[in-house]
Image (cartoon, rainbow, N blue to C red; front, side, top):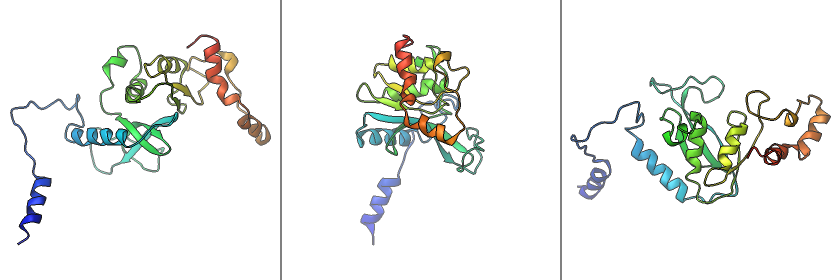
Length: 206
């Protein structure tokens, strides 16, 4: 009794392994056990969503309470310790992602890019069209990264808040922090948030 249902269960959960294949090193493929699943998620997620002109890149965290060599100690997020990835998102939808404990793409690190920026540019490779605008926070942004993103084949224009030191910004575009609430409102409602990329274009950094 129930042979048809049992057969369906067997088909869905049956798996085999080819012992002749060499196992990849843990350092090269830390997600080797679930890589087919992750690749399938990426393939489906990119087909199921049409990117708008404006999207964003930020970090995402998957909480984990167990032990694992790739688990990160995270004290600044409510999710707690777990696995982190950089994600390209649009209106709350995750279009694609790149786990941080995976080796960064060599084709970009060989160009002198940091692992963080190399992962983001690799995600830009998956963007189907050119001339998108991407918002990033101060963890990602720098003058060099803005230049590299705009010179990427997909010509992505970056914007976001940048730190005052070590980001390669000209001194005349640095905006002093405003603490008065009335002054803060004026700054937020002005067009100054867009001056960063405009100035970079004008001084031929890009």
